[in-house]
Amino acid sequence: MADWRNNRNGRTEEIFDSENQARVEGLSSKISRLKGFALDIESETREQNRNLDTMHDDFGSGEGLLTGSMTRLNHMVSSGKGNRKVMCYIIIGLVGLFFLSYYLISKVTRG
Image (cartoon, rainbow, N blue to C red):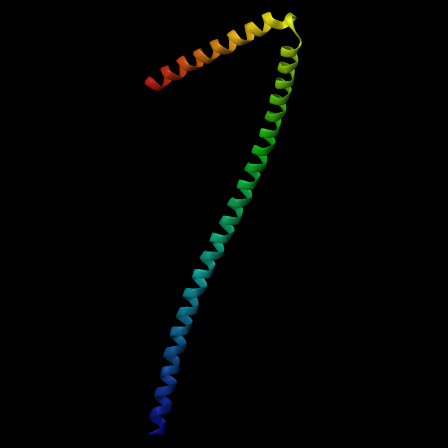
């Protein structure tokens, strides 16, 4: 009777061992996939950070251009009567540009 128990226990240990090995292999494959996902997320994050840095630089240069334009415009407005004609032309040009862009956008959206 002792031999039968030892034989059966040895067999059960083999079954448990094979099941454990199968589970370890499954866990290993899942860990590999998670590692791949983590590396993909890391590379995507780095790329997005580079894009944000580029956008920050672009907006910074645009801000510099707008600041310079506003400074010149304020100087021109405050300079007095000599530039009233120029101011009138600029305002008429801006209004005309607005209506032209409105017309073109409405033409494109209709078909």
